Image 1 (cartoon, rainbow over the protein chains, first blue to last red):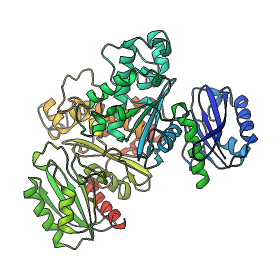
Image 2: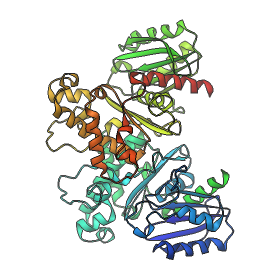
Image 3: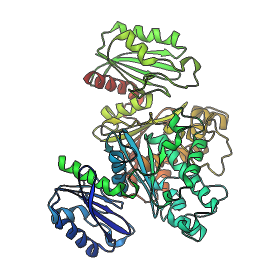
Image 4: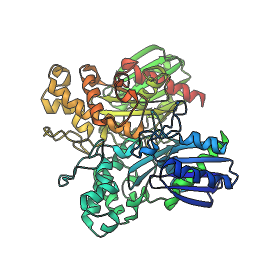
Length: 290
Length: 290
């Protein structure tokens, strides 16, 4: 039996499951302070005998195993969680091997092993919601160097008709600053879910997302791009993204996946909303095997 | 004894060397048509008994081993080389194991094993010259998915005072379209080498290069970025790039390498102009070991 945590900004999803990615039990706990949330998390896993745990956490986090602060949450705007020793706390409580990475890395791993990128050698998973983040898997390994990527904060070209200043406290009008859920809400005065039928909202959104995907393609060349998060529930945005990515690439690449077959390249998650939690099971399994 | 080819748009550098990256003999052959250039290349390697060869080629090339056109040059503007079966020709002529990748991937590998990124787990090598291209190594492996990356063709934000339309035939004002050697020459009416003392040329150049590096950092997080190619000979550009990268990141990351120590992060090649040819020796060694 394996454990998995998808630690998000608003909720922690905790699950027990198998190494085949099957979820047997799950619980959702609101993200308050560590002192309030973590004891409930520990209690859930103590009920069952798990042999390993995988954590996909909101970031930024320290994922460098050789670092003295490995497993900590870093300079998050959620002040109560700043410098919180997440991994160490869970290790002390549960005494099992624990894999630790970002929420989007875990989701990328879940989709790679069991979802839309099953049987491929690489994929990228991007979530577009409260924040924007992405993770990538190449030849089975999560892409990490100096740290985990921060793909939500890339530079995008502003639409000439878009005068919105952006919501990113660091970069103002980076991708997350212009295209995250809070950016949509601040720009249009309503949440995205209430704007489903306003075409110009999703045309502009696709304009920024398509740019980001083109950057990921040029730099990473993943074999599949999977879009999750709240914005991916706006089904009407996918054809707009496909069209704009093709226009931006402008025939530079010849593979059908980047041309006529782009609908098979930029896709919805194969695991629906469970990519992260199932990815946590994969992480747990890997940690057990090491 | 190992062989290495750095196949560029204007010249082929061919070398014999050791698995320690030492070059023992080398020759430079102008890039004309395959019928003119390749026989000279083969003749050079036939002189010596090599046990394996590594090729770093100008692109785009097919690097997917399972593809029927693996080892071919693809839709290059050099018409005589379009669809040329580079790898197959060399294999038929030399009958040794041959590693095949892009010129920038080979250079990244050379810097990773013997150069500026020695002892690190990842690096990115970018060349800025006639074209702009980059390759990346993570945990010893070249980053490749659907194909090799095309990092020179990323989208950049146009400088508000720059009205130059760009030289890229596909994307006009992508990075390569705005910041390659031909872009500098067309925008300013002189080659970069003749503009060394014109500050505004290098400020604008750094503006675009810094944006590209920030995208690579956000997406890949390499542990070192190495800038090669003609533009890197303009030593005055490095402080401008360092400054602009820091300004664009705006304190988002805390590691010293992305802040006060950025001069140790974005660097010149450790192997000078030999990164690609030495990387070819690494490729040859790896192919021999497989």
